[in-house]
Length: 448
Image 1: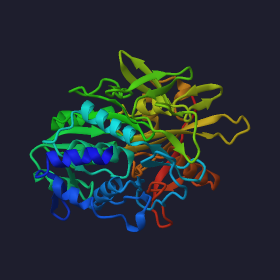
Image 2: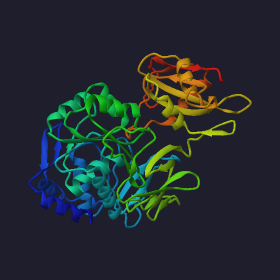
Image 3: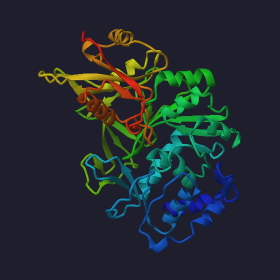
């Protein structure tokens, strides 16, 4: 099905530019890409693992479709899966391991095609607005928004070698109309550097919550509306903010995508139903995924057809029997003008009462005081929800998926607290080295 769909696209647009590599200057028409697909796979491979950020990734996917191999994109430094794919599966998306063993989500051809259809239709992706390929092609977001629209809908893809602002600027002359998909950390960096291109006609952000202040600033200074996109590895696109002006509520992730239905279960978690929902987890199935239904870990509300995220079921903080979502505290904290980034998590108090303490990890655009931020939150939240400890950092850092690891930051905080260290290094947990300079400070504030 997928290869036949590609052949139809390639025939209809055979002489049009399909793919450009802005690093090398090379380009391929749809007809040339079609010829690349005819190269046999080495050793009759049953599994293909596309990697990297070049034309070879696209070639590998097409060859797998042509020779009926299963595609399993891998991000940098990830190891191939050791287990065989399930029957009738054509694609595996790897997910972060929860038990130390990598696992995946299996998809059929129909499910992949449905996700691409939903994205192209809902977002209004157009052949005359090529995609700038900045995010990872192996990441579910990149594969669904960049690779599948190219191969199944003829949306040209221009590969950018690096997401650095100076490199993005060099892509300004690639085409007079462009679509740019990024993650919040990239949009912030591009905005600060003044690198958001004037010829970006469609701007998309996914992978992590999009700060409302960032969305507003980009709109006011560049006239570019960043459209908040919410999806999951297990089911592809879920909701999309298609409005022409900035949102009024940071928790809003827009309305359900075309052909996607959402509901809230009795535990407050969002449930997704669509033809794009994956077949199963692999190698260990779970009752939360399958038969066109995916139960997320996201707490949500639906008001007037708009979905509002209220945290995650596995992130809830319990303070003396009362529960609060760290996302609610983060949303309030980001409204302070000095806060560039923030992350909230809980840690054991270390006292006999065993009450969890709330920690706020903050990156500030200007030097502020703990007391200033604390008083700001007291005007917005109950006193028991105000963080007890404040951790000022140079940057929170993100992984390849544009996400910040709450668990990793909690782990580093606890390690340093166990050692009695109150001055911490200036790198993110995944970047920390012995040579790091002491740039983090933990400040304990009195509890109101």
